[in-house]
Length: 103
Image 1: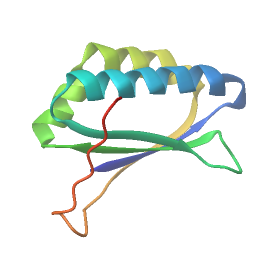
Image 2: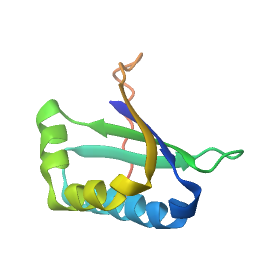
Image 3: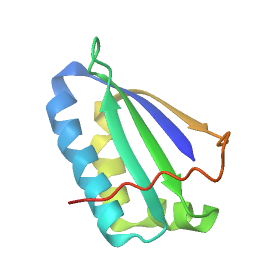
Image 4: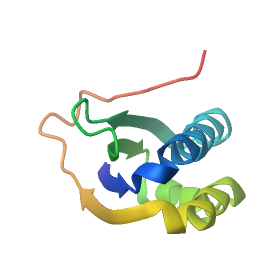
């Protein structure tokens, strides 16, 4: 489980949202090891974005970051990102799993 805390330059916010939406949707639809990709923007400062990511395993995470759609997102948004903090998390109740899906 990981929280990605990202600050985007304001002039790129709309374009960044397109990228993050696309990579999240493709990941959830095509990668069985990706359980959650949930991106939110702060209400008071929408340029501060947090993404909750959960995976079935470390191997699933490694496959995700090696995927073509993740690499497109990563390379396409490098110039848009002012700051990035990746924070691995430990679930306090590991039996409570978050699964997110695309309708």
